[in-house]
Image (cartoon, rainbow, N blue to C red; front, side):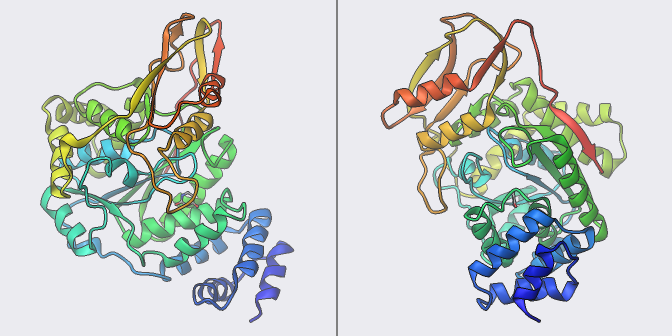
Length: 424
Ligand code: URA
């Protein structure tokens, strides 16, 4: 087999065989195919796409490039969740404890934030001492003990994805449906939960900019799951505006706690309830109303909040350690209904404040970020408090100007639909 022939075949729109895909992946992870040839191959995939058969074979090959985690050692119904990446997305920190307090198992291996999107590991590390480098044995032990654990991905889980993602990140080949689908599904399938919940984000702050692409990505991932005999459900949700009110690591951890105390913005509640309700409906065959009643019950009784605290303690985090940087309040310069708060702009500002990283390995500041005092659909008067900015370095004019530029106003109330489709 010849690497140039395979690149050319894909470049010309041909369908690769399983052995050609295996050759590309294994020879790359073994250091035989260099980055420049793999980059050309990824770009060919970006432009020519892949058939369902190719995506399935790519996913299978990527899974076998590293370790699998044997979740059969965990008793009970195991739910895994993945978001394709958004701004203000703290859903994992909320639905994990809710599911665990309802008797489900939530073994979650998560990633760090990159670029304008946040990552669960960074958010939960806002609690000082929280250990996100558990061994797989410890991870499984904790899930068996308290129903939930959140840890970083192990070094060898889907090794090919680690190498390919880093290369895609610097070659403009991240937003490709077959590459995203195989990257996400290989990690989910290597873990092997009973139910995989996918939150596919669409809009300015997401990789998928339009609903048609988000639907294609969702269908591709659900179909891969089905071929592996797994229950997969994909929610397509809007990421035009940030999710919830808070963006930044400690701020988002605080918002998750507030949610579990029963206080939440409507958008965050809609997504969290929808996700948990689907798990309950699928596993217990109960109605949506009954599922919602059960979620309400664990929130009102404090069980879900206690589960969150139990999680923090079990991984040696200090519950009282969340800190925030200096605060500056920006007042609205306009009057009207907020139509949209651009998610990507807010994600980039949060990163520039220090909450995110430009490249892997950058250090981040957990105490900085943004708190949206008004959300889309709210009426605001000129001079009214609009947004709190938490910062440690100098708060420069270009940052405050960018924040203002993220807002669009309208004369009448307008609300973006949040859950756009569910693919099963
Ligand atoms: N998240 C992933 O895990 N992989 C991608 O390719 C994109 C988002």
